[in-house]
Amino acid sequence: MRVNHTYGRGGALAYLAAYDVPRARLFGRTGPRTGIDPFMNLVAQVMSREPYASAKRVF
Image (cartoon, helix red, strand yellow):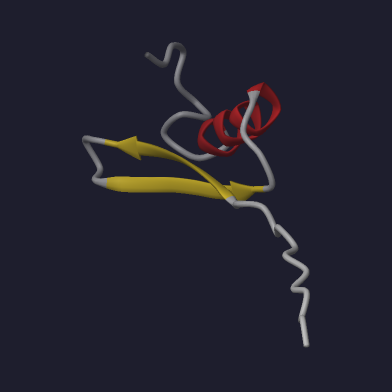
């Protein structure tokens, strides 16, 4: 008797992270894929918190 197996791929979860070196803080988020849109969401997350929200320039 032959048995067939169905393999379903679930995909990988992408993790994007930003490290704040002077404060030793990690900002991270997960998403279904990588690209410019998830990256810009991470940048918006970092820039919405102090001290970055009130900074004139951020490098």
